[in-house]
Length: 161
Image (tube, rainbow, N blue to C red; front, side):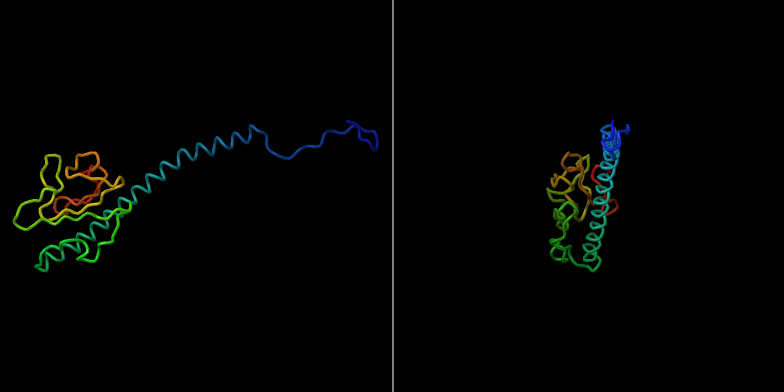
């Protein structure tokens, strides 16, 4: 190209920037990193919510059992122990079902795969992520529940009991 001032040939001015292929490569790499990181982060968040629900149930169990140790009847509901407004990590209230003393296990009691009640004095559980539950732990809607079983010997996901 001829320069208008002195008649000499000069090269084209270079442009600073990225080519389309370079930009597409960067986008592809970032997409790959996101595809790996997002599911792992969701799994970590899910585990943290389950751990919080387990901790809450242990705390509630301790408060409820303090009535039994003191020789009193189990509280009728969570409001009696000042925990009526406590929500699980998914925004649902914790479920508490005291069994009437000496009258057997009530019809709504949580049950294992053999349909045997999992507790003898009270049920305490979170409805889990889906907010649905039925008494047998083997039901699909109960699999994500965080339950107290074996009279407090197990607290965790219903599908692991």
